[in-house]
Amino acid sequence: MHSSFVIIFVIEIPAPDFDLEKTLNSGQVFHWEKIDNGFVGTIGNYAVYVEQGGDTLRALTEGGAPATPGSRRAAAPGSQELAPPIVESVARYFALDHPLAEICASFPQDPVMNTARDFCRGLRIIRQPKWECLATFICSSMKQVAHIRQISAALRNSFGDQGKIGSHLIYTFSDANLREKLCALPGVGAKVANCVMLFAYERLRAFPIDVWIERILRQQYFPRRKKVTGLRLREFSETYFGEHGGYAQQYLFHHARTALRKPGLSRDSSTPKAFGARNDKRRNQRRGDSKRRSRNRKALAGQVVSPAGLG
Image (cartoon, rainbow, N blue to C red; front, side, top):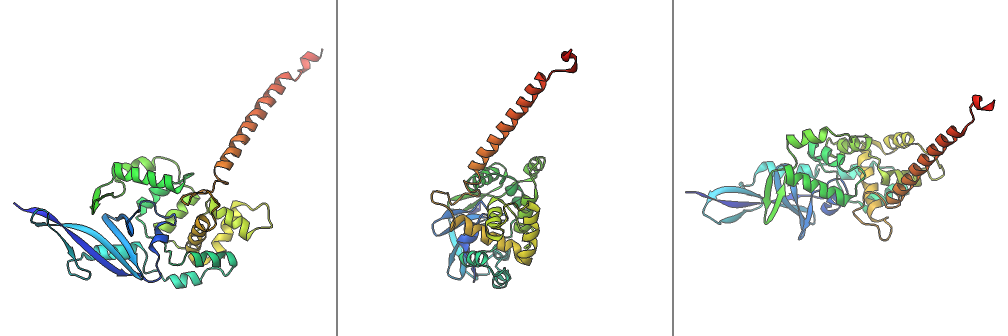
């Protein structure tokens, strides 16, 4: 009787002008987990461990083959045993073919954009699976990054297929049953649509505007105008940041979430507290005030003397 043993595929890929940690922690993908010197996650149907050493990306994935019980061996980098699909999948997933220097050179030359570009050097826009990206960003509305990670994990654990890398269990994203359930829910607006266009369909001009980006645009590009409509912000972003506006947006976003965060603000916050909890409180107050005004108007209406009562 044949038993199965595990082959560990070790893949080394040239990755110049790439920063793995910045890319995975930049708020565009939510399921990768920091382990040792690298990260564990999935790329398509593969469970993968990735780490970076200088200009080289090292990835480990497992495959099965008949052999003696408990056997375990590694296929050396460059070996014919390496599965070409996973090599291509890793390089494509992390967009190592994007001409990042040219993309960054296309950004507007202004102090805000220059600072963000320098801070985010090596950050790339990942090519995410389309359904995974759509479902994740539907669930991201009004959530912090930590919450989105929890939701993504729950969906994967409940509906995904199990994979393994080392001692870590990894789940791929959801099947058709989950897709049908989620697509029955409302939730895809302009921001979610732009996120999916950028992160899954490689529409690099798409410029998602969330709370962070809206605040940056208003404070840095329209500082003297108190009232700027959302339509004006969208029109400005679509023209000013050019054909690689999605990269510019991601650099501005990541820089604001990390380098510019206020003391005490969680690094994993997708919504600044000043724009989140405080605005929620203000909205609740406005709703309460509106209800009180409505009740007062009704009460006053009931007290108005009718023409018949004048006699």
